[in-house]
Length: 378
Image (cartoon, rainbow, N blue to C red; front, side, top):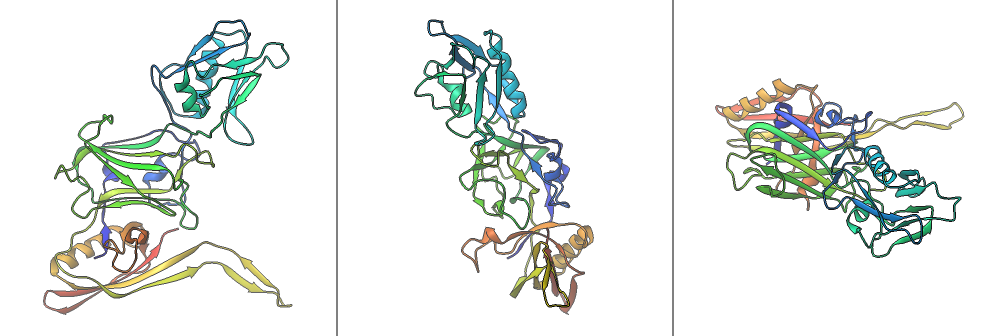
């Protein structure tokens, strides 16, 4: 049974919050599925906890350790965190510091202006390892004898998240997030992505946590009986958490997101065959001498099928849905939720819009067919 997601709870959320965003790629883009290519990009979210917020260092061989204490809290960008580290180190030192990302590796770099001095910056990670680990430094040994140090590992955040307050318990049956249709989603296959539900906006021990598999072009999770299994009515608060702290692009990116429910059918389903026809939008022309000129444009797919044996109630549901979205509003479908014709049915989840007006036929009293042609959204 194809699942058509006719409700996106995000559209009616009482409040939406997020971890970080770049000014040119705000989080509001990911909530608007009508413009898939307008994306959200992370700016680097850093949660600094008390007790894990110090850097111990010296600038002279015989000097006692100086302790820089970074103010605990949430920092919504690299720039804010780096400024806090600079402030903390300069508060206990006579040197000036530059905290940045190395231009070649993207790893975090700590630079002192003692480069021309006999003294050098010495970072005593073994005395206070926690914050160094967050930044990507190997804290099993101290860094000594130089004016600057580049972290051993790439780290771009402690996490990124989206939190939705629906004002009342909501029971979604599906979660999807996509980006550009023609390139892989900008989240690493090794990333840890979780969907969490909870009665309150406190995430230390959420009521339920679900692991989301990162596919090349999709984050997705469905349960037609309701994602929240321990609470039939669902939860008021839902959180999408992504930990991808060594992403080589230095940011995460998403273009459209749904947390919602699908339309339930009394009877009937799309009948085989399902046609999936690739569409190339590229323009190919030829000069008088026969040389080929190509204007390369994105590819997409047209999915065509016919619902069969629909009841009067079912056809009303689907017709009402058509009236709501028309050809102008995209929506998510999962074409193979039960993995009937593919080893991984979730890969057949698509952001689509109607390519043309659907055609309904009454075959006999209370027995309808309904033809759909869905064009995958770019």
